[in-house]
Length: 381
Image (cartoon, rainbow, N blue to C red):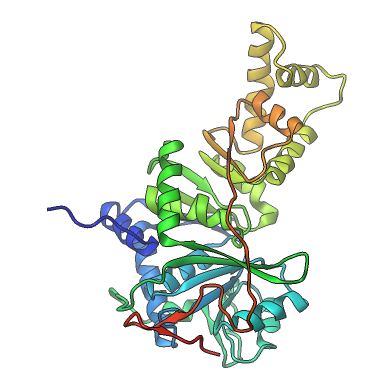
């Protein structure tokens, strides 16, 4: 008799911890050095964070707002919120001022994760928030009583912690202010993310040996759909750069096999290639131009590969990339031609998902809250 197939992201996390406990799940860079977490480590960390959240009053149906760039703490906390039957709502860390006030007013979250001191201070201006401080430099904890240091959240919860609440249907919700100044929300259920992750893993033939690179904004829906969900289903390694400023160097060090980005991401990388090439009259430039236009005989193609294409792929961190995904609109003609000349097959995946207006104040992006018994409750104000 076979056991039931995992149906939520925390279920799949438990599955990976059972199947490959000593395999590397996460790598993140801090102060110039790479740090690793095994699948067993990730599961224990999520369990302990979930216990810490529950101890501080996080219950089923609650939403955890994450104001963060790509970082492992935000990922682990989002899974911890889901572990407790809650929903993770990543928010663009550039959101500030009136836009941030509008989002906090409409969503009225009780728990928010912030990645730096300025965000913590900005969030403390809004009453009723419990702020989790990433404190990346491990400084003295913030003195405000509403602030919990990320490290303290998971300390003292040794052993397994199993939440009694059923998971909320929504795994992630995404919110933003549209061009008309209205708050709009986009939701992704566990079922949808698992289904789409299966499709991507199968289509791109991803295995546990693959390396993925998380350089896009954590608040982007495509991050959950095309990296986080496939990672927890496929069991491959997910890598976080130290910062957005170091992402190109970090990607070059790792040479990931899976890269996902928007056409703006690829256009920026294409500019790096262009900057590395000499002037328009040089023989290197002429060879790559011929490669872009699919011209030249066998000798020219061989010279282009060994003296230009191969070194350039290494410089931009695409030397081992076999799954290059562009999310949303396809590459423009010039960028597409350049990556084709570099022998990188960039495949388009849709960035679909309906954004709906949030009309009522204090309406959460995830709908009504749910108690541990599954009975719908009114949102907590």
